[in-house]
Picture (tube, rainbow, N blue to C red):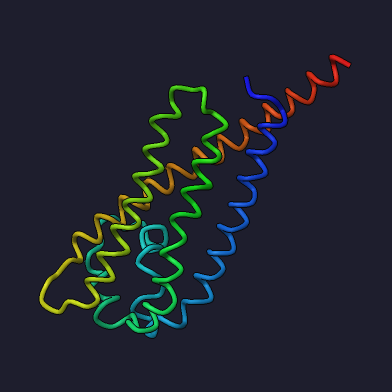
Length: 183
């Protein structure tokens, strides 16, 4: 069993990455006007489309972003740069929370779900960046798959993250109570 100090260190690390996570979410919101020039056509990023509209594998929204909703230069200078770092931030946050359960066999499988979510996010990011530059190749259906897979994995990993943090808090309270009882 982990000691209270080790659990506390992991929870503090998770909290630091959670703060970074929310800073990056704020940066995404600040960047929106720099790359979405037709909010009536594409009111949000392709990353947020599934969460906003509950649409799986929506290649048409990706096409709309390319052909009328996104200002490409603004996208590359703002959103794309932020989205290069963001998957590392949330993946590290998720993996750190999972480390609280390191002794559990389930940890091994959940770790790969987190990594798969990060890989799907990067596949979405890079394929969309390439798609914006290509005129003859329609990658929208492929990008839609990456977006949907990434979104589902992010949701699952978020639920696991919250569960791990709550479990860590319970372990921390038990360790503190055990320390007080032994005095």
